[in-house]
Length: 155
Image (spheres, rainbow, N blue to C red):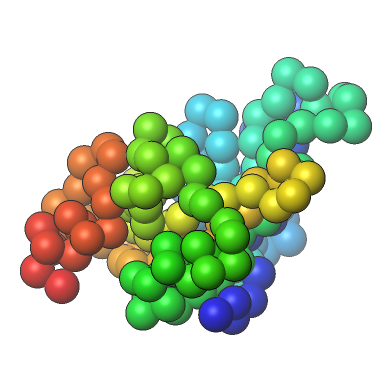
């Protein structure tokens, strides 16, 4: 099921300074927002999320306790059943109940499908797959599920 690590997250105090730093490491900017910025490590396969934090000077930030595993779309379509057979329930994320996931995430023109759950220590885990990168002609609305997205985009 798991094919690799898709994303890692770091808290930052100064987003502009951090963008300059990671851009200087030749990472491609994927998305820039007011509180979060993503850089491609390998486009379509892995990225780094930088989260603006008022508390970045302390050793804990929620973004440190999140890992996303890359899975293929066909696996993501059946992941609810796969998790349940292991006694794991998906949890609410971005206003979408665990039962209604996988959900669609959109950062500008990058679309991903994901499902969220927790490990026994409360660490946030995610299975994610990229759907369309650099796409502008896609039907999308907040709270859209993978099934709705596939139907709306005739995929």
